[in-house]
Image (cartoon, rainbow, N blue to C red):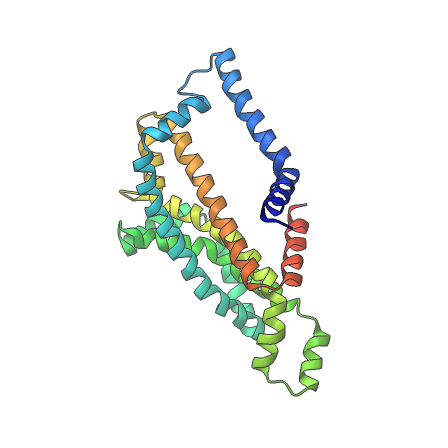
Length: 272
């Protein structure tokens, strides 16, 4: 197959899979633009897509600089949550005592609104990025721990018994069986965690910050700059989607195809 035919095949497949979705979004934007003009909705209540686009272009420099600041807080908080949550989830699986001690505390901690924690973190870590990184870390931690524990407990007992009959060590059982079986669940936790890390960073920027998308949202709200509000929300949505699919790319590179298929089935089951 020539390169041109291969490219045409890939494009055709993408259009078949996503064409309807793209058309739906285009129709929604056109209806928004036309409906706002016909109904004469005030711009401070619901600006038109054209006004939002123009405002986005006008403040693109600001959006980029504030987005990079928020992105750094999100990534550092998420990476910290991965480093802490994975070992903690593994310890919970291997120790019933730790499970009884840690799990109730985790559930109680997760039930606390993160807005209530933000002022405390500001007192502890100051107005700099450390408080936002910590809040992103706390917000992303819970789903990663829970998914790690669930995934580890889903390991087929028959495989563990088979490995023990072959005189495999606990380390070999962990790396070759338990970790492999849990990997779709762990990556599911990563996908949830990375989006929650964005929420945590923004909440931290709401409370105390002199930069970031959360700070820009508050500034636009104080100035009643509704087009800028929508621009920042749009950037946040794009940022979250990009981070989510970045995890999917890593998953595709790390996991073999059977485990990726299992992960896709798990996501379908959760969303259905």
